[in-house]
Structures are given as structure tokens and as C-alpha cells.
Image (cartoon, rainbow, N blue to C red):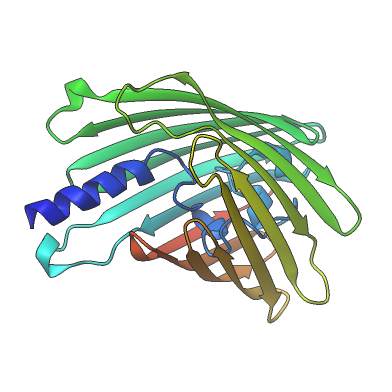
Length: 274
């Protein structure tokens, strides 16, 4: 059991190294980050770059949780989970998002993340800080600081997004720092067939540097939808259900990961009147 726990803990450390790794949290989990329009739940997610937030959309408050592994008898029912919360605000020109995250692996390994994104029209800069430690060893906690940037270019029927992520400012010297990556994506607006998205990620430091993701969302009703996505390198399958009203929304997601099995996630958002 100790060997199994140690191996899974290594996977968890890797999973905790980035806020969207191995897959996004919240509404974006079930569609693997492919279904985004600036006035929808994807663009409003506080842990997603502010470049994709619709100008003048006001305040949004969101919470979410992900369970990365089912309860298992040989692991004494200990969990791998992440809890996230955040808020975003968009005026006519300036946009800002902030989020915090807590990752827990078996009650042994912990990671805390702070995320800030500031945008001007269709451009944003992101700053992310990480702190991670083993229980009982808080005094030896490692920290990591990163920058990122995003550009959102809307067209009549779709939008194109470009991102640079994990530009390391402060190394943790732990061997688990996330590698620099470039991301390009196309996201359609709602249409007769729902909404679609394609994402291409390039991680130059890896032997197989390219990852493709394809997603689809279909609205059963105006307020209720289902979505699914598939990615390669690694092969993952995501499915989810989303309910969205005028001032609130919620999503339930499932993702199959080759190392973590089926993960489950839930998120909710509220947009108060100001």
C-alpha cells in the first residue's frame, strides 16, 4: 500500500503544479476548456484569463471542487481533491479576476495557489503563485511564481485565443515546476448545433510537445446543456452538464484521465446586481 500511495502522490504533485493541470476546474472541466464565449460561464470563470471576459459584464463570484480519485479501500478512503473560489469584475474597459485554490492529496501533500488576471479590452496578464508542502513540514514549504499572457480576438461567429503560460519568475527548486507552454484555440458562439471549440497546446520541452482537444456543447433548453470533449497526449474524455440562468449557474463534470481514473467536479457561480 505504501508503494501505491507514493506513486499516486507523485502524480498528485504533478497535478498540483498548475491551476489548469491536468485539466481545468469548474465549468471548463467537462469540456476540457474548449467551450468559451465571453458572456458565458467559460469566459466568466475567475481562474481563466480576464481577456475572455465580456466587457461591462459586472461582478461574478464562483466556487468549485474536484475529486481526482475515487475512494479506495487500499488507500483507507483518503481523497485527492481541489477546492477553488474566486471572483471577477469587468467594466467597460478594465477587467480583473482573482482566485485561490487548495489541493489536498491523502491528507499528506498540500498545495495552495493564488491567481490574478488583469485585462484591458482583449488582452490580459496573469500572475500565479504556488505554495506546497508535506503535512508536518510546513517550515520547508516550497514556493513558485509564474506569469502568463492571453489575447482574445472575437469575430462574428467565433473567437480566437492565444495564451502563453508558466513563464517562471521564481523557481521552487523541487523538480515539479510546470513547463512553459503555448496555447491556441478557436471557440464558436452559440449556434444551431450548440457550441464548438478546438484547442492546441504546445509544450516545447517535451518529447511529444503537441496536445489537441476537441469539444462540443449542446443546449437541450436555453438554460440546460450537455457537453463533451476529447484530448490526445494524454488521452482524456470529459463530459458535463450545465445549468445557466440570468444571474446564476452550475455545472457537474466528469473526466477520464489515464493516471487518475474518473475524476468528478462541481462548480457554481452567482452574478449579483450592482
